[in-house]
Image (cartoon, rainbow, N blue to C red):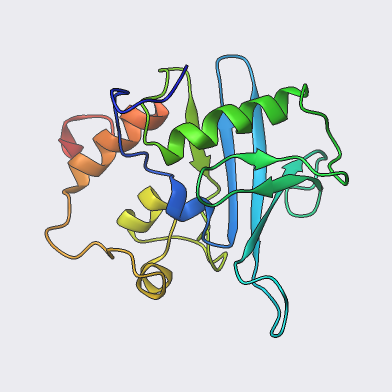
Length: 184
């Protein structure tokens, strides 16, 4: 698919802001595959020739969900493209590389995704790693304090009803949170 100005646009719940927050861990699910990635932000050191942060991408390759990430490449924060480097542990033909190089530029462009595609965070803030409890934060992957520090909208305004949030979860995950007349 080529992304053009005519490509249908959507707002992805887990999007560019979450992925670039600095400590994002997310799983991308396709029709037959699933890959978990970690994107870490490294700010330039004082006096360095580098002036912009670098975003390192890791792929979960072991059973320890906290530590078993293998270096994959560097994320371009302007395009969403993941560039492999000489230290990358995988080649451009690896399914996990193809998946992230396909998905992130589309997320950056807010392009519509196929119905079988999903991207989900692990329930922790993409910036600080704290457990998310505020419904708006669970939806976005960024806690309210960190959203404020990042200059993002923090959910000011009317809050969605519990029924609306449950419907959103059911739509995105296929899981009904509430069943029965008591919750309707």
